[in-house]
Length: 124
Image 1: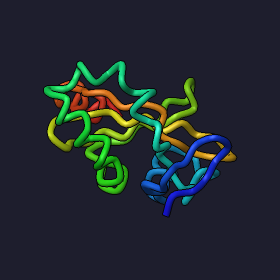
Image 2: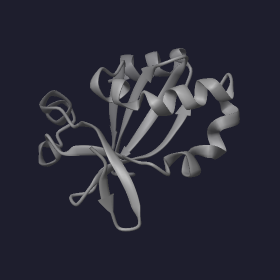
Image 3: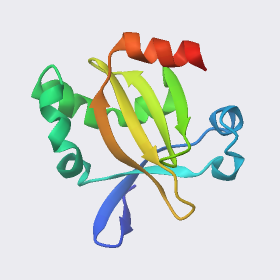
């Protein structure tokens, strides 16, 4: 069910799992809901041309909950206070979740090569 925040509507697309919180030493964010603004496409539109097609871009937007629920890889970016969820819908993508005590939200999405994700995965 959509939630009303400030001047926009958002929907809950998942939460930060206990496993991800523990693996990344961010237990203070465990079980916090991750929301997606209904205006996310306005903020991520700059990356639309990076996708295989506009259909792939919109299909990814519609399936962010699947990436959050079952990511291929997740890494914590301490400098930017965010989690990067990597997964695949039509192509591999990075879903950046901004961490905030008041609200954790998807800040952007962009395509990422599987090779680069595998290097990050092997590094951690």
